[in-house]
Length: 201
Image (tube, rainbow, N blue to C red; front, side):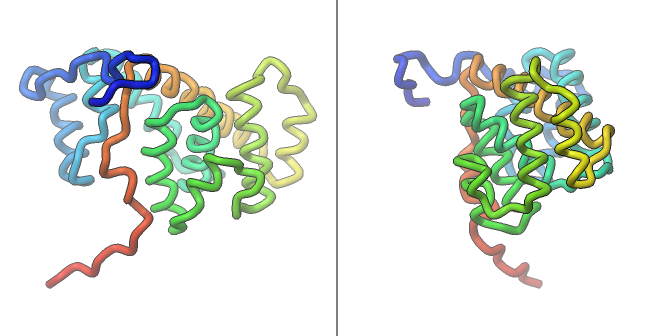
């Protein structure tokens, strides 16, 4: 790893050996590797504390995998926008890749991370991100007017919960990634940018 501008090593905590991890965590990591072709660094980094690994991914999956009023792309858009506001390199790059894939748009993640109000998104998505950003950066001032603004775009109170919970959860993730010096896997940078090559029979 290269040193950061502050002169502190970017990778501050060692990655545990896979064969020394509890079986359930080892199986989850291997399953991710088989599906993606690589293991995102967040899995390896959090595995050093098994109880926290389990709690983190249980809540992550409850928020990101449950079907609700938000599409998969909507959810990833929330992560990218709020992670950019929190200056989290890992989450912007990793979830930017996932957003490109779900949205089938090679440009969307860069636009949302830089300035979502200029991005090629719908007014509904812009309202969603306005609310998410307020949760991420200024949650003490959230009031009825914020919920009303969401409602004009068809978001109900449960949708507001989902938007806010994703923003809040990833605010934690952003801070932990910055704390431990977690760097994005190289594989994330090109995902969703180039057309997939057709599978050979």
